[in-house]
Length: 331
Image 1 (tube, rainbow, N blue to C red):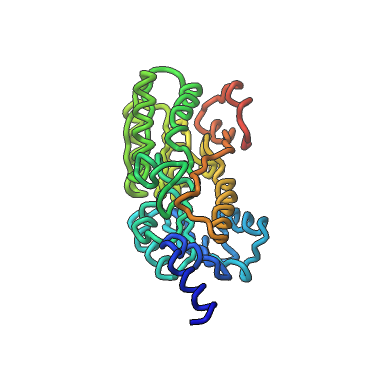
Image 2: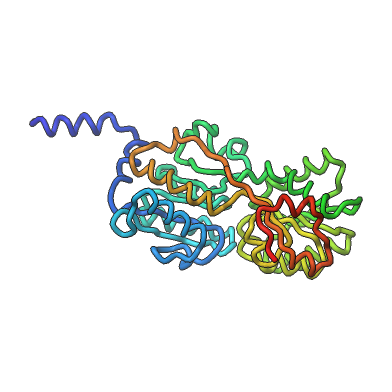
């Protein structure tokens, strides 16, 4: 046996399954799978992806010196706001032999169910990734999942406070939520109970339920609405905004997408910034890092976005104390 054969044999013997996975990821071009909760596959696929989050990821990689085509390619799948499709789409990406899988928060369980070996970078992951057993700990995830959280549950109390500042008084706050956002709904219940505020629960499982739920909330005496969005309501953001406006509900949203489409206000982590930061996770994995030892990161940029046109449409006056704290005012 020659020296080269001996060295290759020793190398193969000391590689663990995890390091073998990341070693395989060093091929070029690196194939990056994108599993998006909303949007079509065409919007999140390839060099010409139109989805803002995917464009931010691509730009983040380019900022790190990666060239599309030569160093990496995108294999994207969009769930179109239908949680029932996420598992099949995740399996498609695994079958396509992606080297690393970037998964939007609501799709993380589908991604985990499809592979235990391909590194997964979650963006806006589980409400509490430790409690929900997505990872062993934030400092040492322990499996094939790493990435960034949105801190959605941590922001729920702040969103409720901003709503009460805008619409004070004893009227209940309606909460529109869906199956993939149960953790944030539980956080809302705890936050409201601690403050002595009444919530009206409206869980939706289809686009058709959005309008009827807002109408029911209005009929029950709600004057304000907090939207806890997963993939369904994110995909149908315009329908959510229109239903809230039609029922003259002052609404707080979890992402800036909603006020950009005419919603009243949002307080949230900057999702585009998170996808830009996700590029560094992909880069480290491509260079051999093990996701099991890559700490989960949290948002560093938060923004309060308010829409003055939406306020006028429902007859709400935004107090100066709220406007002065806004990071962006849409007129």
